[in-house]
Length: 200
Image 1: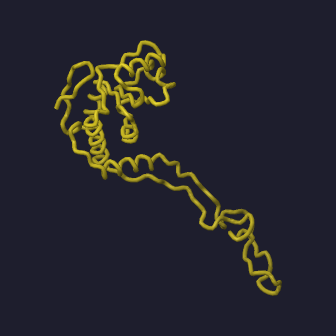
Image 2 (image 1 turned 90 degrees about the horizontal axis):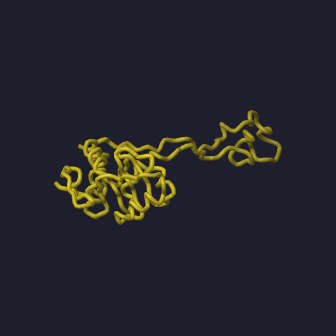
Image 3 (image 1 turned 45 degrees about the vertical axis):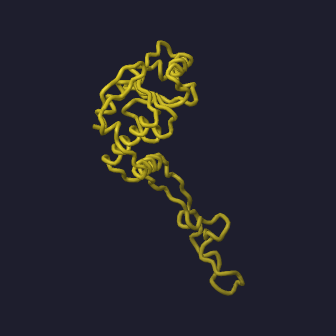
């Protein structure tokens, strides 16, 4: 199939990558798994075994008039352990490589159908200035979104840092969350070719 490039040119792209049907359950599963993989999972609390102290019975079992107690580190006591203490855990979900790539193809195809994908021959930024990047994007009718290039140019990266709604990614660092969350995606011809090699 042919993909229109800004400026009137066209390029041949794979129907399997840019013409695939959208599968919402698959895309949802991959997006959730990607977000889950970014969670630190470092939350930790101490249970009664981990709290220091409490090695002996505070008073004898019977005859004091107090309720029986075996340790001063009981969760019922002040400075005691937490009843169901949180422990470090791994939130990652398993997603097969085949599923991940199929979801990326489905997302790219849907972006193209929704006219949210803008392809250009190249993005040449002559100086690391925010105004230069902003002018280049406004010329394409894009005020906020994701810019994808095969290799990130230093001027493009430095010039885009002060634009709050513009993010720059290399083609080999592309992820489903960035694609789904962007209003518009500006992609260079080299980036499209790199993505096709990856998802072929």
